[in-house]
Amino acid sequence: MSLHYVSRLSAIIVLVLLLPVKAFSNPDAPKSRIAKRDSILKKINPPAIPAYSISIISFGAKGDSITNCKPAFDKALRIAKKRKGLKIVVPAGIYFVDGPLQLVSNVCIELQKGARLKFSTNPASYLPVVSTSWEGTFLYNYSPFIYGYQLENISITGQGTIDGNASQTFNKWKDLQEKDQMLSRDMNHNNDAFKKRLFGKNHYLRPQLIQLFECKNILIEGVKIINSPFWCIHLLKSENATIRGISYDAKNLNNDGVDPEYSKNILIEDVDFNNGDDNVAIKSGRDHEGRSTAIPSENIIIRNCRFKGLHGVVIGSEMSGGVRNVFIENCTYGGYCKRGIYLKSNPDRGGFITNIYVNNVSFDKVEDCFFITSYYHGEGKGFATDIHNVFVDGLKCRQATNAGLVVQGFPGKKVRDIYFSNVTIDSAPIGVSFTNTENIVMNDVTIGGEMKEPSAAK
Image (cartoon, rainbow, N blue to C red; front, side, top):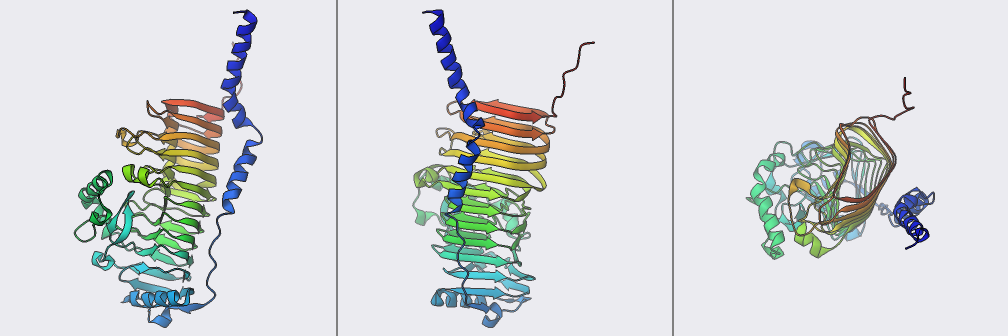
């Protein structure tokens, strides 16, 4: 073999190795991302608000915090269904609701400034059980407090408050749930018939505050959410949802802010999070059931939000149907987060995480700034997750008390094609930890301070 041929072969190998870096630094790459994001935004359109409106007072409700207003809401919702459209206006006052609000299509509930829905603490009020999902497994359980199933054109708006009133009741079920939690997972793994998955009375799986199941054309705007029994907003197998300008003071156990699961075409913007768990947690089912359902969560845009709580944005860990096309843009912090951006799975899950874009996001003090793990809780086997194509451009953090950038693949399924650009983390005991990875690219990454001119010899 001639020296000339070896030189040409080496040049080709070097060129191939550099291609991912060139692709990431391509000045047209942001244009491609923006075009992709904007094409998704065109698919997300809030429903029209019904023109005809009636005050809930007209149906017998009283904002005195004592009168049970569920019959008034039930009557208003029957009228909305009959008319095929109604805005139910809730004026200032505290409205006690002894049981779930089971929504209908083409309805808007407008909570005016000073209005508060305060839900009952009595578990029996949320029976009979309804078709729902719990931590990635379909089953029958207590009704979510605000529940919609197979509906369209749903709006919850205004400057009022939705109060789950759960701190002294459902919140305490966390210590009692393990037996039912494990049973639900066994039913998932064993592919038990859905009709056998009966929970509810004498069981301890906490219901969600708001769940929209197989719904489309959704708007939740302006309201404040507090004191939830479990996850706050659960979008399950739903599409075309806008969650905008809402705020949280929901610090009970597992009070996730927004959980899209098997859902697509979702815009989450201008939200003030303050949650006892993940701010946004993107999911797509657990283990066997998630893989067999095979509906990815996709086309999700999170922008102009303020994060505060356990973690900012999480993908997983129940994501066996896959997650793709997630955009996290122009977000900052409202307080402490344990982790900023967190992608988590384990080898029980399978599925995939791909095409994740993080742009212009900042955190103050965290434990870990950016974390990907394929081995969550150090458990699982047989179904490693395919995690690739994650693009981070513009990430800042003042202090990471544990680690700056962490990527943990799995020996048989490496995390690959992860691109970091314009990352600044002022301090972190562990700056970078990449294990079982392939093609991790970094451009303009500074951790622990920027090095200036080298010192001169004396």
